[in-house]
Length: 142
Image (cartoon, rainbow, N blue to C red):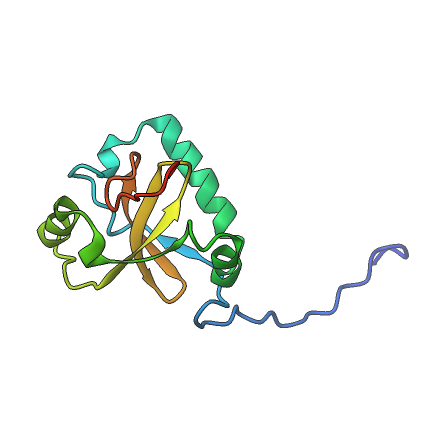
């Protein structure tokens, strides 16, 4: 016998899946293309830095691409592959990703960057660039 003060079952409502589109979808991360070798390989990342990076990724994945891009478009944006340093272009060839025209980069801190490939709402992590070497800026403090 049911208790008199038991809460009534809540009405079930279907949840809408997030829209898949240009910048309206929430970020999602994939790690299958992470480069573990080379100058910007993930084998160079210390345990404490991994934690810090994961916190940032967790922060960003709660936002849509439009939100992330509007926060600071100078920090998160596409970069044409020819603008990358030669070592980065050569590394793309070495890991069989030379057929991409652009990479996407996230700014972690003053100099640190995450590099990867954006396809729809998915960001495929590629490199951790702690010294801003993949595509150095001529601007001060970057």
